[in-house]
Length: 315
Image 1 (cartoon, helix red, strand yellow):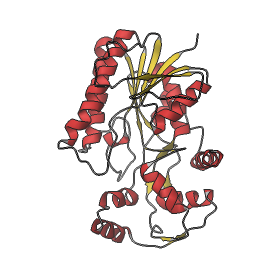
Image 2 (tube, rainbow, N blue to C red):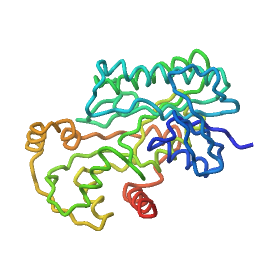
Image 3 (cartoon, helix red, strand yellow):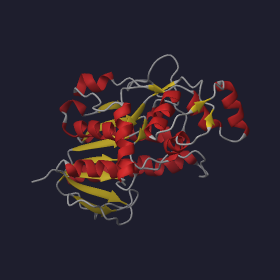
Image 4 (cartoon, rainbow, N blue to C red):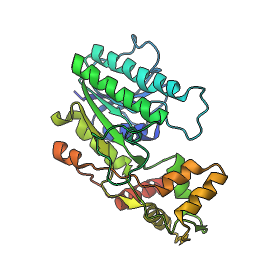
């Protein structure tokens, strides 16, 4: 009998790739979406529900592992009257609702996709580690941390195995948001003011993240642990643009504009948050992944980007 895995948010960027990845490995994937959707693989079966609804009639029979990717995503321009409460409703209450259903259904392990925003927005003197004190005041990051703590408490009291994974910026086929914008910029024959952006940023491809999740599905040392996910191959923003341009047969003209000027000009046009991310450093220490799980990233940044663009060309 195939091992049955529930993946929530299977119509999202990560969920889509992960569903296909595990289906191709022979797992029976129950792909959760809020509305009915068709998946092009015989090992993927769709299920529909809202995390905040009553889940009594949802059949999770024989599901061994839940990989919880769904949630209220981080947005740059929040419109909710109370952003923290809006995030809590889905990211905390919705997650606990699903976890309680998992306990009732006899699910063995619950893998929660959290966020590096739990650690903070940037690093200064040293890389983030899983056991760092939480420093975020971001509503999204706080909601993810509260969900982590609630799940670990549930695990301690009831026995559901829980694994927490905090990814950094995720990229791969069909990537959206800021990374998609960077890909587009790197394809242009325009001068870009990025010549001074030597600050390092950790990233993680869907290929490496899916491989780490797959390891965490069964590894005995993963239970009740928090892991940071990255390619283990940190690069500067300037290097990233160079690689993105190379993958698109483009050569960039990079202007050496000081970071202080970039931040100032960005603030004038309402892009202060975007500039802050581009100009700041955010690196993570994934030593724990190797020490506890024996896991190292199978793909470096160059290989991951090549795979991403090859997939785009095939489509």
